[in-house]
Length: 331
Image 1 (cartoon, helix red, strand yellow):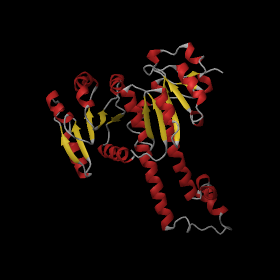
Image 2 (tube, helix red, strand yellow):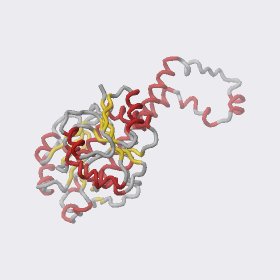
Image 3 (cartoon, helix red, strand yellow):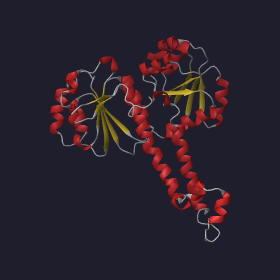
Image 4 (tube, helix red, strand yellow):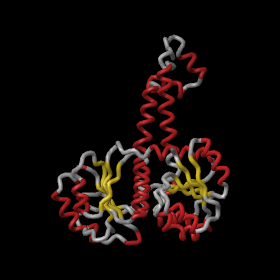
């Protein structure tokens, strides 16, 4: 049974809507004491924890964070205005899901979709990182698109996992504790497996990017180094497109768009004249099975768009075409 824990200023409104949607609803009255939060943190509650905050709430939520980290619940933050302070709080604590509250039904659809989409059948993504908040955000992004993240903390572990099947990508945090870039380059040269998929290194901008990292031979393995913020944006962009555009292709194919393109380009007047002498039948397009397929595809497109709601705040504009902070590695 699906469970939801509400911590909002309008619990009664959310309660009724989630209950009608088939959720078991639990509530924390707003505001709450540390003792109240700790009761849930120490419980076996598994589900989604929906928290409504304002810019002024972040200081108070800091006192809850250690307790929240002990929960197995997935945290979804609601706000009417996503300020820089709120965004910084989420990044600091590894919370990926931020919804700008407008529509309760859309929120329920969002929770339903990201809950169902934590499947892992499109491949594996290797991640070398030891920073828990960043790990949580990366996990939240890639799992909603059907990829299995494999987290490692050492170079040897990464290279061992590289031998597994269906590895799609490797993400390397150059700032991982005890990470030696020269050791990584040396061992990567000897690994035939790591050459089989793209490697994307990244590093916190606060740590700086030193010239020896660019001159170490990294250019033979990767084409650019991203900041953490750029990495989130890159993953969101490429994974969304990888899911969205095949669905559009399926819709076009099912609708025989190549043969029907004139219906989107010509006026009704023009169409009636141009089709007068042609034997055009819409029967094959309006068959029940084909119409049902249209419904399935458009529902999938809708779900793909809705599950972006909570992570759009992580996206930077023009990361590749206008690479602000993107460090291209020179050959």
